Figure 1 (spheres, rainbow, N blue to C red):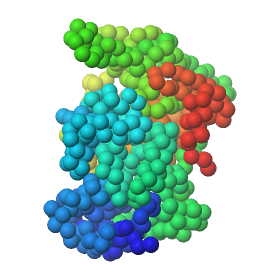
Figure 2 (cartoon, rainbow, N blue to C red):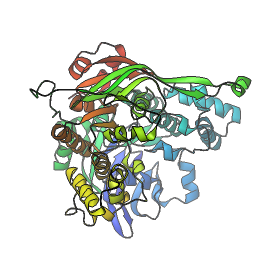
Figure 3 (tube, rainbow, N blue to C red):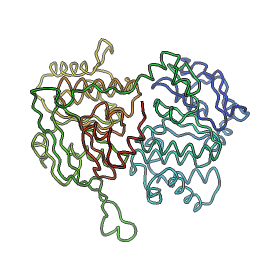
Figure 4 (spheres, helix red, strand yellow):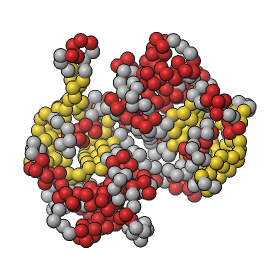
Length: 533
């Protein structure tokens, strides 16, 4: 069988500096090839270059697709290929989707442009595509703007748009990064079904080796722009040849925490106590009734939990289950009903009275690139908390505190000259996340709320950040409220687990009870969908 896509000697350079070095690979009709590597390895640039979507890049080599060299086509000819024969699922749907159009209108626009259907038919086709990707209430979701959907729902809307024209080749750049394990399984099954129906080939760009093991037929491993190993998935996973491939395989999170009762003589106290938390949003009613009264969407209902000193409470559930909403309420960044006490004190309506609690409870967000101000230097970012809570501290002492906090998370001026005057964009994703942790630690909190702290990171960097958090917990006695959809991260970090579905807590218990002997059907599905050893 001849190859659908044959890439030969592909080189991509910026300002005459190569970032992809003469790589070769092929994809046959109906085949699933995974392109694997860490951030900066050249995976995404390789895929984007095939459709010449990289600005200011010097591209050479050939990419034969159905007998035509994509790299030699005119821009007009390429427009006929993009979206029709070759579709792309981008990694970050919030930046790829138009914020001024509903998701249904965006999908319908692709169908209208590429297939020429009438507007009414395009709208119905868009709803069906959303339903095919597993989005609940597709008719209502089609009328939503991107910001009104959860991260997982936005990603599925992107997938629906890419599949609108039944392409021959799908380039999927981290298509399940924002999804929890059950939704990952659904999306992989969906892509596999569509592939079987249409004979579609898939080039999967990912750093998730478990995804590769479950989905791909062949795997190609990239390091620093070089293709270092490729072969059948079973063969490469069973007997990796290159040291970099072996390093990737050895990146599973490892449990290294102080277990309950291990520290004899220590007294554990409750730092965060929540009873019957209820969090709701006003939503518009359809029709004339919406002019007079808003409807209500309950995001969290009757949630109760306790977080002990020196321990980690892991909150796990699918996108839209209420995990992050619960975290925001714990930080008093969202109105709630019920009882919530931090360090034995309830949150107040007065910002001045809440100031000591704000210092005691800090947060590390999911995406360090968007949570760190691009206009502030590292010194200003990390030292901001000290400036707020200890304004009397002289600048030299504040700078010492900043350097100490950065050193504690593994960032020093010896490795990064002029560290304090640099900006976030000058660092990798893992380094930015370390910076975000330093910003939280500098005010010496007792509780850290970790909202998906490693989901945006490569597997090797994820392991490093988890080891850092485990060390900080052991040394400082920190308590973590860990929000995640990754069962492996829960196994490595948590002492207790709370499982959420549709805003409700469906199961709680120790990490061994919940993950080794799950009682609720939803928890059983979560654990079953998680990758095995």
